[in-house]
Length: 229
Ligand SMILES: [Mg+2]
Image (cartoon, rainbow, N blue to C red):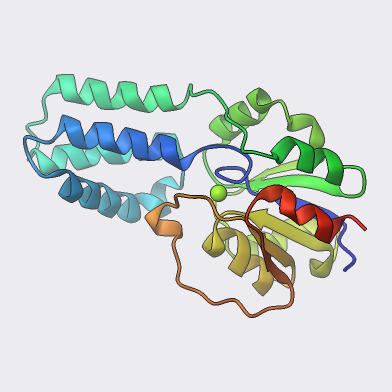
């Protein structure tokens, strides 16, 4: 291996993210439980998110707009403004959550930063991801922050080109097989999967990966033996 740049996904790789979305989704279902059972509300919300993904992209603001739209649909446009107010308030609250780094993140970055260029490659709202990085206390480890609207093969090819390296000099670490592993392998890079205990339905894929450039580890610091000679 001749890795020069190691890219980290952010949400649920460096810090806690999906549990905050789930928490807010539960609150949303509770607000509308007079209209539909919780699981049906969740299904309706997911449907709205999938429809709006090409228009809105990812992140909390998009999630909030999708909750509003779903609530209007479920209530047949008779949504109580008090509920509307609460949905917006819950969305804003998500944007002010503390940053909870996952176990071993800091020591892993510390150890790798001596031998590699380290970057962040994440989706989500630009402003929100910048806020999280600033608050995280780990921003100084990174040479470059890439906030991407999508994480598909051409997006990684663009990033690799921008970093001025060859695909086989790039390694991506993340919790999503769909966004952090498959497109990177496709672009010719290395990929490491660090599963998180909960994954957004959209990011879930059934996939058996048989590729010498792929590794799976249980926790983030387990990548160190592979990368430190
Ligand atoms: Mg992630």
